[in-house]
Image (tube, chains in turn purple, orange, blue, yellow):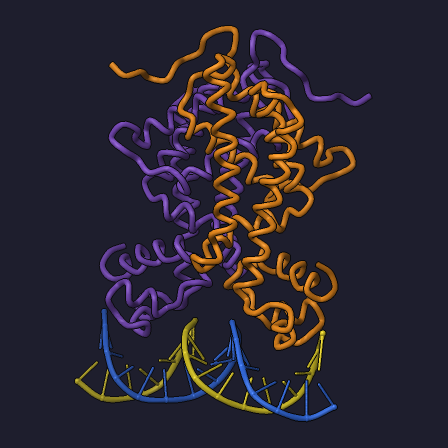
Length: 201
Length: 201
DNA sequence: GTCTATACTATGATAGAC
DNA sequence: GTCTATCATAGTATAGAC
């Protein structure tokens, strides 16, 4: 995609990220692109369709990137987990505002339009859960509640676009590597045994 | 606060959490409370003031809870970190929808009304950074970038209201304890040395 | 493909009766 | 304290000229 349609998506991303979907009007979008609101409808059938395009590419792109990265990396759970985190962080670093919109404004989509992005998001989550399960089964990761750990990892990842801005001294790739380290340390099974989850009595 | 004003805050919390501030109308709020939109203005001067009340109590309450909990716990950094995480998770568990609104909709507040909640949020962040710094200085925590680690811890905590619903088998207190464990494992300095951050050359 | 003009609906907020 | 009625503005979207 290119030209004005592309510009509409880019400016909508910035506006939605800053003010939210409902906080942004078609007049705002038109003004940012340099056309009138009515002209936006030449490129998208509705405001909802703009958001649908953004959330869909946002979620599907990151899912595809992670999928591809995992395919190149063998089946060691710790390596896969590190790759998962790094790929998510790097990919979100390409379009941080898009990552914010894809997450924050998914709820503003009508159910029908939300299906595709929601499916992609769920697939990404299942990939992580699968890695964690295999790591625990292999005895590499501490035996913890998988849902809880995956939520923690997801929380770390999804927060990055909200606070991080790259510098020469700390690039997105640096951040990705640091976070991968942090996550591996978190799930890892240390030589000395720490406190365990309580077990059924 | 009690009576209708209190009900306005409660229903607004649910509505804002589900649809966002700009996605909720005064008519929606009135209908949820069981009065007309015009009657809401008897209790709050504007829609902005409702959001200001919610974000302010949300952020100040959690800050106060953490402050109080830390005062009871001595000055060991690992213990403080565990207390910090547990207190945040438990407090957000009391009003999970309020926690979501306080975070998601803070950006929708005019600058003047955002001052108080923003200050409380920043204080809470500085408390965490201080704990991390002392833990690293004491050699208890791995020597990592503090901003990065605090963002990771914050990301884990802030995500909880979005996915967790307590059950008899897994209460909010259980979640809080599990997350405290997870975070301590993440920052902790293991007996065997792992990969380090790159150092200036 | 963009414009002006406009239809129609929804919004935040106020006035004044009860 | 709540209501009905209303205002002024802003919202999404369409029609038709250029």
